[in-house]
Image 1 (cartoon, rainbow, N blue to C red):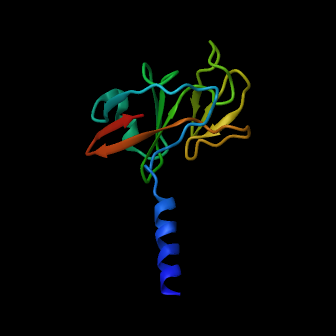
Image 2 (image 1 turned 90 degrees about the horizontal axis):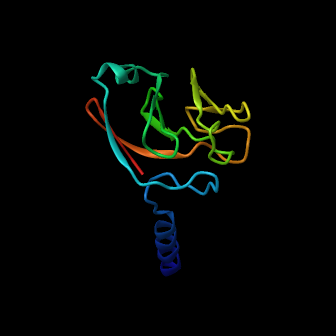
Amino acid sequence: MKKSVLLSVLFLVFFSCSNSGPVNTNPFIPNYSFSVDINMNLPLYSNLQYPSNAVYYAGKGVKGLIIFNTGSGYNVFDAACPNQNVSSCSTMTINGIEAVCPCDGKTYSLFSGQGSLQYPMKQYRVDVNGNVLHIYN
């Protein structure tokens, strides 16, 4: 009996391990590797020091990044519409605590990345070191 319990525990531990990062299974948004540091002491990013504020950062990811202060941490999403092919209209805009896809008018929560369609927003990893956000894929 003890042996089967031990094996069950080891099985659960082995299969519950993860790399603690978001997984992208979205066929519309390609994977691009990048790394960027955002200094929130700079005026352009200082709003990120306050909960429920978001900023757009161009030039990384597929269509840029949407960085959001949740109040308990930071979420970083690709600004590409998650349920559209990448096109000229597929850069999402920030509307308060939501991101809006101009292609179809669908909205997505910046707290979770979830919307009403099949795929949520593509999320990136973020580490906080003082007032610097390290964002990477």
